[in-house]
Length: 454
Image 1 (spheres, rainbow, N blue to C red):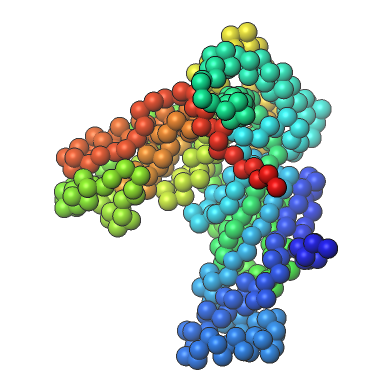
Image 2: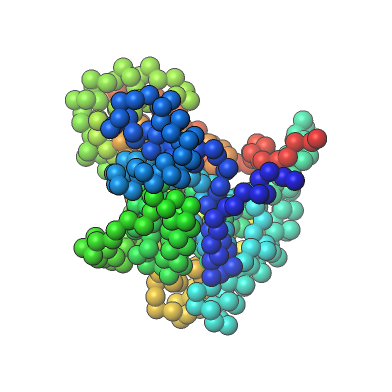
């Protein structure tokens, strides 16, 4: 029998049919006890070997009962980690969970996975709301084959390229285009690897999120984690803190300006004296090498631009910079150059007509802008504002300027790189950003996770 099948993972069902699972690895010393072993150094000078002997004698549960709850310091939770799996939730839930500076994990990729059969999360739950989502799915389905054929015509396989890799690259390119027509209510799955303190702190915000689906997931997360780690969850709640978090999440969480620049950089946070002092560190940096983190003391840069929600999901993975969570609306228009311009000419009129109808129907569906997000295609533009120190923004601009990056995000990264060249011109600092934009790259077909042949 498979040893892993005997492990008792802590699970909670979600109302939409998904689940939350706290992974039980079968560790001899579980995360809470491991955290306490580290924390004891602050109060007990004895060797960890003596503490391990106590764990062996009493067992980790009794060991924890002796110390952890009574100590009550958040830093202990930093020393124990766990992995949570969340399945069958909307893209909006995934973004809310990932909206955390110390998030680590993975999510289903719309750039590599066919979303033909993925369920949709439909909070309005009316005949019309379901039809809006299914009409978008119908276009996604009907467009894939003619799009792939058109891509093969435009980008024929070159000599020396493996057919299997080429086919994967063609499919990836098709998904890059068609994901713009998926509603944000499309379901996804994600993993979250976190320490116990960060999980508790983030859930304290998520339970007041504007979306009921996020609140529900937060409750199930807390309930499952409390069962798995009783000494680390179930903290006392303070009315003032709860009211403050409720106000922030309800009134200030979403970034939703009426107007927004197409692209803009502000560098008024830079210290020019320090830039000159550190100029040699910029100049001597070779390609594919990160700047030292202490260069953040040179100040911050802020970039504001419009980007489709699908590519915002990729951008959000850069957690070394601060990003606001945009509200997905139709106010700023659809990314037509890519999501319509890259379609075969025979499909463009159909796509434009569909988008016009969807816009009208979504606006009539509900007055609640937060709930509308579930029905809006991810090719719509959202306002992105990111703020970060020099090492973080240089890393982002260089990494996301490459040919395997989604073209709409790649274009913004290249604009960021050009702005950085101007800012750092007096330092003669090289910015190693790629210059090509939107070209077909067969290497996309190699970026896969496949089972080795046995």
